[in-house]
Image 1 (cartoon, one colour):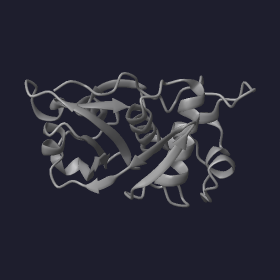
Image 2 (cartoon, rainbow, N blue to C red; image 1 turned 60 degrees about the vertical axis):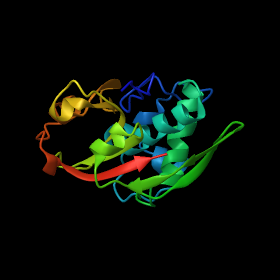
Image 3 (tube, helix red, strand yellow; image 1 turned 90 degrees about the vertical axis):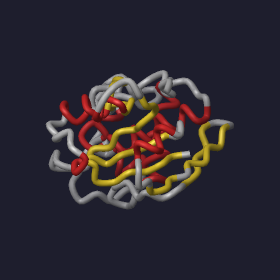
Image 4 (spheres, helix red, strand yellow; image 1 turned 45 degrees about the horizontal axis):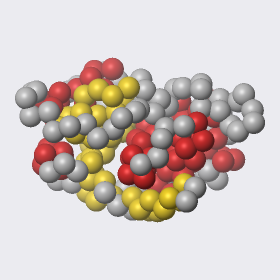
Length: 189
């Protein structure tokens, strides 16, 4: 099954900047506080804690058919944080809608008992990985039936800013590539 994503959002990128400035938005410790109105007790950055919002943002831009420009990525990450996370910037697993320019995008989030079936059905998936000290999220955008294990899941690695497989993401985060490392599974539409 073909990959849906044509780009990856890199949560550690210094090239996503605030308009009219040279300030790297994803390294800004006030991003979640000031831009997204979150009251996180410990100041963090998208670079450190942005795998969920970057995954959601890539889904939003892909679903809307929008290019991965600086402005679109910044808006999508901001909206994903505002609408897809709680006051502490933790992914809620709830559906929401966002507006990016003239495009309204509905993000439907459902729990998935079987992420393999979700991927086989051609649907988008989002998994929460445990074992790295904090939740890591990976957007599943395809399935390779010729591969084995977690290499079958085509995914976006927001930590490295590249398209890869779920196994490669797990390895780069030092998470065991075993079913128990997937804490939560979602279908996105």
